[in-house]
Length: 107
Image 1 (cartoon, helix red, strand yellow):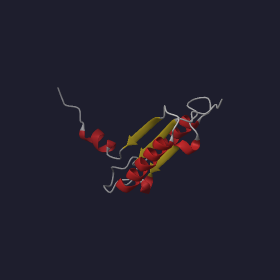
Image 2 (spheres, rainbow, N blue to C red):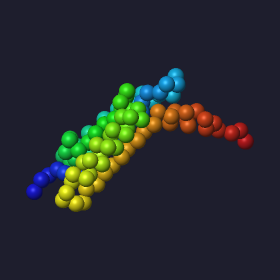
Image 3 (cartoon, helix red, strand yellow):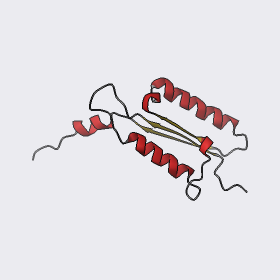
């Protein structure tokens, strides 16, 4: 019996760059990398390294994300033993905009 979770697949997307100055989130890449480490850790989730795809930085474009989703679909379709699971994790660079837009109101 394998100690790996071979039926688990993950697409981790971190948009840490933005064309608008000040909107980029510098910690997104670190968060995505940390999540990948948890998923592949043998005593936690034990996903095989080849079952995880990271899309971040300059690759985190619409085309890059669509390519990642295509990769995930192909992996799931190729998993013929049944019971495959998928994780799609997405962190947008615009989260900083949401924080700035929410201001406390005075009472």
